[in-house]
Image 1 (spheres, one colour):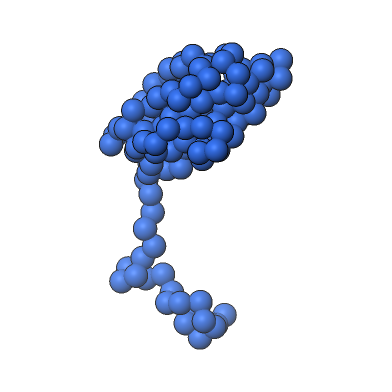
Image 2 (image 1 turned 30 degrees about the vertical axis):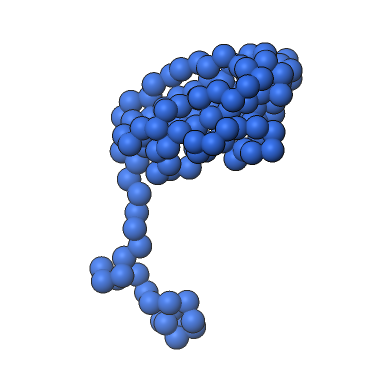
Length: 122
């Protein structure tokens, strides 16, 4: 097998240039439910101890626009759009917050109906 440096792929992984590995290490999941609103809503406060988070939109009628950041969430300013549940459990939009993100998470629904079911892992 050719050395990676000879085929233009960069230096091989050695202790001198090891790739960083993220060890989430979370041991606690805290579940919360945030009622839907047709206005900008804080879903999770900034938390430097957060290892990860999941968000599920259980609304049967409203889509949830989720924003990672501190600006106002809207249907024009969002990170991800979570679909409505559609009348059955397990069908709505689900999102896993990128590992390492510890800032605020905001949201707004297209129709105020249902909840955001959130698990924050610390």
